[in-house]
Amino acid sequence: MPTGALLASSPKVCGCRQCLRDRDERVNGFPAELSTFIVCSACGCKRCPHATDHRNVCTGSNEPGQPGSAYAAFKAPIVGEMGSRPGEG
Picture 1 (cartoon, rainbow, N blue to C red):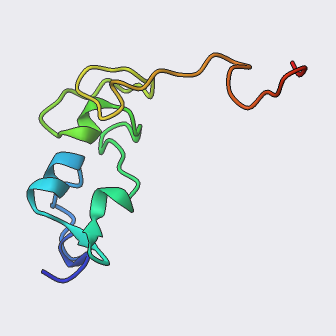
Picture 2 (spheres, one colour):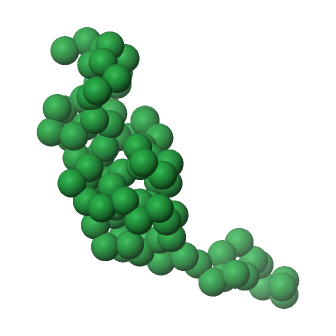
């Protein structure tokens, strides 16, 4: 299958993370999910469980840690925890 041809040629093709995996979509030899910004087709949020798999319900939320989301295990850092050096903020 030509790189990106399936998504470019048909607007009805699902672009959720699971469908990209199931179709083995590739961009320059790498899995398309590594180079494609995947968002929910309904709400546009990247952390919505529907962006991970179209069979999941759209939550309309971009909050991390949602069950069913590819970002479910992500925990937001505490402000000041990352990037600060000793003696700063």
